Image (cartoon, rainbow, N blue to C red):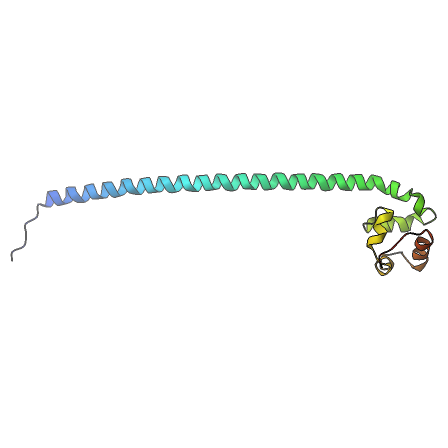
Length: 135
C-alpha cells in the first residue's frame, strides 16, 4: 500500500492546537495547585497563630503564678502552724513545692529528708506541731 499523503500544514496546525489546549489545561491545573497551596498555607499560619496565642497565655499564667507565689513566700513563712521552724528550712520547703501546711501531706519523711538542709530535727519539729506527712 502506498503511504497516505498528509497535508503538512494541517498536521502542524493540529499539533499547535493540541499544544495550546495542553498549555491551558496546564495553566488551569497550576492555578488550582497554587490556590490549594495558598489555602493550606493560610490554614497552617492560622493554626500557628492559635498555638502561639495559647503559648503566650500559658506563659502569662506561669508568670502570674511565679510572681504570686513569690509574694506568698512571706505568707508561708508567717503561718502560725510553722512558727519556731527556721526560715531557711521553710524556704527550702517552699522551693520544693510545699506552699501550705496541707502540702506536707503529699510528701513522705524520706522525701523531705532528701531536701538540702532538712534533717531529722526539722522533721521532729514538724511532727511536734502535728503536721501530717505522707505515710
